[in-house]
Length: 315
Image (cartoon, rainbow, N blue to C red; front, side, top):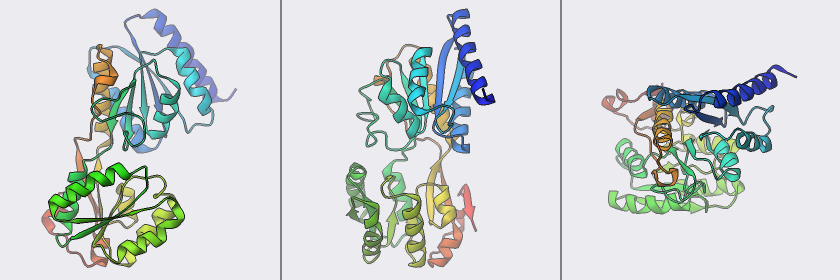
């Protein structure tokens, strides 16, 4: 038995023993999609919030990217443990757990578009055993920042699929109020992206990226980044990694604080509230990430007062 399996067995046994020793201790299982830095920060924020409270908690963690924890077994292990609460960090872990477990409250974190992803019915009420802290920065804030950075923006382009259509519909009304025309291209597969991108580039002043797993694969993301950069088209990316790779800017959130938000929701559930009645939260700490090399290449001047407030600047 390797070290990882031994540790997993140890924590499971210790967890069960601890449950029997302290009836007041709340059992919390944390399932994360990855052990990359953003996910670890969210876990850190979550635990910190729980430990600030008067509630005594015992944590058991699973990582779905760990081959020693096959996906089909994770849900069964959790059901056997019978925790008071499950916390999922990321869309993949949320999908794995929520599809199998419907009788234990689940608080998700680090999830984009939880409604269009099918996890919840609405941001106000999930309609199931979930609630959570999303990564959804309001569309109005995203588009206002785009207009602020690119004052000459008259037509904004966006690629979308049926999955991301609700986001685009909302954006259309927001753009209209801003005096910007949203030019959208519906695609059904990754192979349509080059043609759709080139068609949009002929008639828009900027490209807005909407989270969509069909559109933003590693290959298509690289194509869109290179095309917009070579053709002088401002691109708002999905994350700081997009900006580092050549997108003009993005709005990002503090992952540790998103974890703290999930912790606040968890405490409400552990105090007796129903998860289905607790609204989904949006990030409350948002920051600007800029690529000045890109701005120079596309001949866009970013004022110093904007650069000074950006949290991340690539030069």
